Length: 94
Image 1 (spheres, helix red, strand yellow):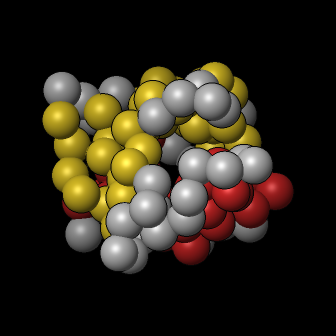
Image 2 (cartoon, helix red, strand yellow):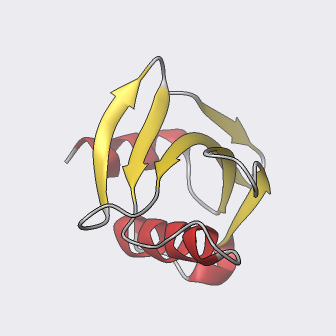
Image 3 (cartoon, one colour):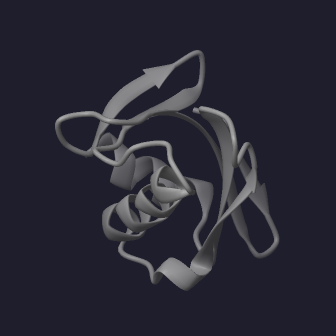
């Protein structure tokens, strides 16, 4: 998985599929985390849903997650403050 470790957290490359029947991790393709979201891609709702979903999945507050790039794209780079790449990988693999 394309996770880059930084001194203060990690960045994760994601590909989002909006308007899914439910939000879920759909796997990893070419190192990119595939995430289905039940929110539409309108007015930033899918971005908000992605942050909420990752916060629940990784058990961190929403305030520690931000979208660094790709706010208007399905391909996004998300920053998670305070976690290591090992922690993120072990949570996502479960």
